Length: 272
Image (cartoon, rainbow, N blue to C red; front, side, top):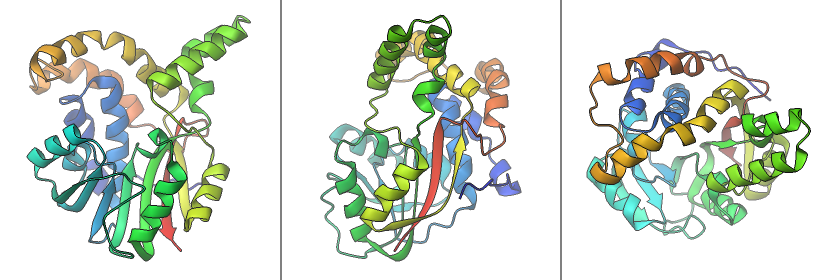
């Protein structure tokens, strides 16, 4: 089931690493940059639904067209998404209670959202309801490798501090706001129960890439201070300001996929 998606000319035409890094803390930026590239050769027919669109930043950088509908339950992000003009319609609603008719959308996506939802199965069922038969639904989530791959916890494991390793994994999972970190078998069962079949998936983000993201949470304090006072993550968005950071991150951005021990999984599914 796991397929290696080749990097095409289309995928390489935009430098998503720079586009995300100039707007976000680096540890979020290079993960989102990798994910943006995956969407470039996936056909998402209109009308398209973005489940958990947030502030619209990801859609703005990833897609060259407006998406028809962005849905999110939070007022602040929805309002910010409205300033980006990347959706025809924005809807503030819970994903388990969408105000759309049956079989309305021809495709849907959800980027790094589903892992945060406590009532996940209800959201999947509702997503299936509003999709046309045979419609594509693509999404990405952290998987069963996420917690085992955390570098601090692996260090504690290596020196025999198992309880500290468990405590650290619980802590990091909490600050990441993860409700689920499941493997492909578990996801396939969830999706089948909701009315989807998995066409393909691949793991990405190696243990080394995850460690870079993990430590970025701690080294990113200066960016957090800047954001507190300016609502921006960086003092300048000029490319020179990010050259060293991008040089360091480029190897992870260019990692081949799939990664056997990758901490995230990208799924391409279809409504049955």
